[in-house]
Amino acid sequence: MSTSPTISFIGAGNMASAIIGGMLDNGFQADKIWVSAPDDNHLQSIRKRFGISVTTDNRYCAQQADMVVLAVKPQVMAEVCQDIAPVVQNTRPLMVSIAAGLTADTLDEWLGGGLPLVRVMPNTPSLVGKGAAGLYANSQVKDKQKKMVQAVFESIGSALWVEDENLLHAVTALSGSGPAYFFLMLEALESAATEAGIAPETARELAIQTMAGAAEMAGRSEHDPAQLKRNVMSPGGTTEQAIHTFEDGGLRELVKKAYGAAFKRSQEMSKELAKKQ
Ligand SMILES: NC(=O)c1ccc[n+]([C@@H]2O[C@H](COP(=O)([O-])OP(=O)(O)OC[C@H]3O[C@@H](n4cnc5c(N)ncnc54)[C@H](OP(=O)(O)O)[C@@H]3O)[C@@H](O)[C@H]2O)c1
Image (cartoon, rainbow, N blue to C red; front, side):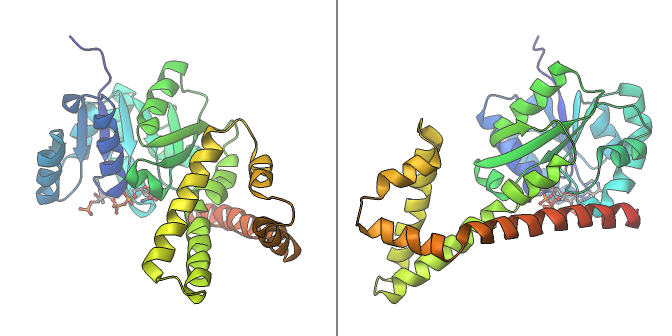
């Protein structure tokens, strides 16, 4: 008999589907995965797609699990948690929330208190198996449970722990909002190259492949990004001209300012969310 954990998802949207798809690609067993959501038609299509078990009953779904992933929008989280609280207080699974802004203490209170709880800040590239997630565990979480949740999120990309919950704001400003920073760079490069006469589709493909290639190199190389950049810059060459233009234009300061603005907004949104509950 298998000893692999049973994992239940409350919410069957984009993130839950992406995580489940990644888990199945990485050897998790379909018969150990449950998902619940209100719309039975949608659940039946998920069941057909993944071969997992589905139910419209959140309590029943939670009851099956060693680990419950709360994959609903923050606005409905209080109602969902309070509904399943009597069940999870009895079975005491590891609770995992992927909702931005809702603190571990708030979630724990809604769930009746004293449960092991992990907060995860995933990002949209998770939807294509290339996510980058920051994870925070409260003091009730055991090492074995940390390994379990890490394995789940590594099936859709990278999963890295932070020791202080407040650092999830720093993660939000980095990898949470980060895909949009690189999309902006793609837009700007594509537009500059198109103005220089390259066909828009060609410019886009060259820019995307360049970004993907640079990311792959940075991930695999023993050199830091500064060295990798220097390796492309031959003295008096074209890259040097472009990099000097970026530096003289204050790109580093601008990135710091943009990062700070996202960080601050993440803190504000968390406070706004707490007030609304
Ligand atoms: N998408 C991302 O890239 C991303 C990144 C970081 C964090 N997140 C967080 O991940 C969470 C899920 O996001 P998502 O993009 O997957 O949202 P989504 O696609 O809207 O999915 C939400 C799911 O929750 C279901 N739901 C609604 N009310 C419910 C209830 N009372 N009980 C059970 N299920 C219920 C919805 O069902 P119906 O559709 O039938 O209403 C839907 O299946 C959010 O908290 C979001 O902040 C998402």
